[in-house]
Image (cartoon, rainbow, N blue to C red; front, side):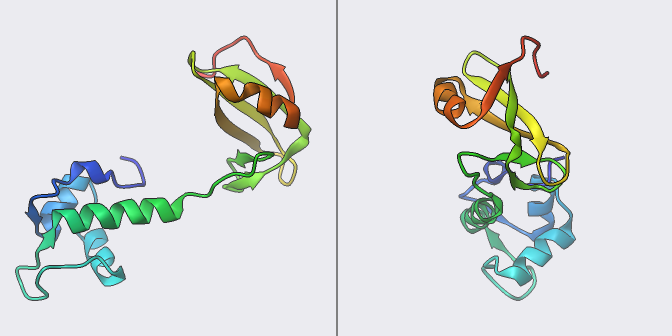
Length: 141
């Protein structure tokens, strides 16, 4: 089970109790109740507490959107710092993932941990201007 809830597991036209919403999302009932305290709109504050599927879906999408941290063009995501960091000496290795994507892997200049970023193959020339790229033949998987 991932950390983020998938909003597409909720049917927008249905109405859910906190228990049903928790089961559909693979979360605990306590998590849903915390979301209600945090601002998830409910249809009725009395029991049975009902949540609109559309409202729940929108709430999850907004929560997921707020959690994203966009990277600057010269940054990779450090797996230890959990933030965008510049790699040491701007040196990164590029590992092809699919025909359309590649993985940039470097070392965080702040903590020395691995830092990564997935890029589109069409964007390689743009990143080659920023980073010192070395190509790796082996797959990252």
